[in-house]
Image (tube, rainbow, N blue to C red; front, side, top):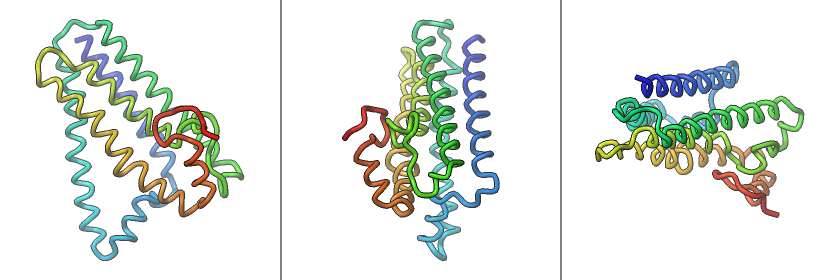
Length: 204
């Protein structure tokens, strides 16, 4: 029971934070530029292709939900040391993602946002710290889920899938394409100075 309560609290905090952030970010903001680009590129077939694109995302969500289920269904006594590590990872991820989103929102309200790129706070060490911490949060679920049962190792698919989506599919590639179009050489210079995903030292 304690394990299920911990899982409920973590997933609840994650859902409320992300849902609130997306709600405030998109309020009166129009279409997401990434999806607007898809619609523009796909032309007359945009409705059909966007429908199937969203169905693929729904199928991917099943893998993420499976990891949460396996964590909640773990019969091991709670908490073990590995469980405490998982909760630490989850709290770090939630805090880091909230902080990076706050820093980006504050930058967008500044006059520099119209022509510059964000390089303040966590954004000085990763071009997408919010994506990194979102991925890190999914790394907590295998720590809560894995036991001697081979089925529980399926929970590793969640962080693997999230990494692939964020880094290669619907996260960084379309967003950086948009930034290159809107910021040009300034964003190209940022790409040379700052890691794309994992936070790290800045390069000269």
